[in-house]
Image 1 (cartoon, rainbow, N blue to C red):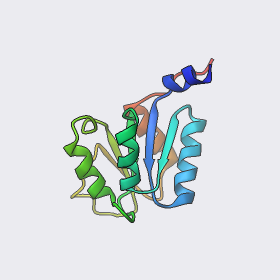
Image 2 (cartoon, rainbow, N blue to C red):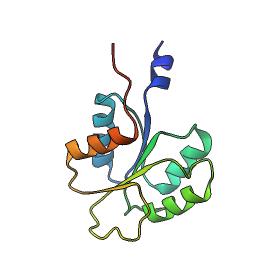
Image 3 (cartoon, helix red, strand yellow):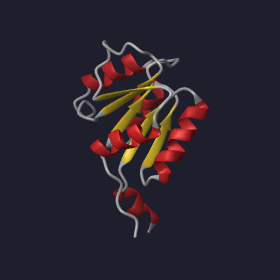
Image 4 (spheres, helix red, strand yellow):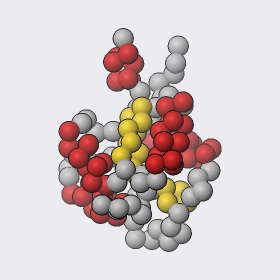
Length: 128
């Protein structure tokens, strides 16, 4: 059953306002065996997290409309159900000194580094 397969795949929430970048990242993650959920800003991501089981990992852009990555991270850390979800910040911003994240990757993204970093936090289930 497809539903059983999806439960086994690690779920990654991709929070990115650039539609092309978000779609490309979601497609890459799905190709590599992850279940990727897109969100276009921090508010949309929090709304999703309020209604769904927590993902295994969050990939977070910083500069977004509505609610930026810093605001999202602040709200995430206030919620005990969400606070322990690892976060990889992917941003063009060179100075990340003020963001609390498990990892920081500067755009343009090195895909191999991104996948290795994601693999550190969650691994896809092997496909038969």
